[in-house]
Length: 96
Image (tube, rainbow, N blue to C red):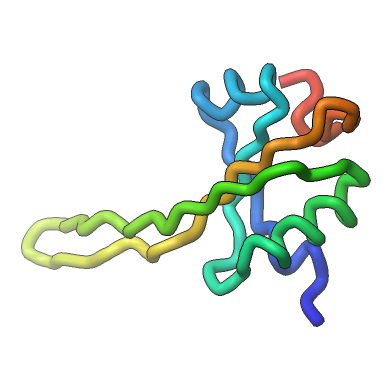
């Protein structure tokens, strides 16, 4: 079994994700092959909160070039976590 800290890679800190915190929505970069059930259990165990809904997106990596060389950034998965109304906020995002 995977650890919650293996599934949740890092939080996504953008202007849009910060505005979502007002409505109990938090955004994380997660393991590419993790499903919604694994993500829910990982967030609940790692932060001690109650999750009501999860939306996931597979983000395609951009094609970049440096001179004549062409490369591609890695594909990754984004999870938008919605907490229940009676759940406490995630302390990782406090003070941002």
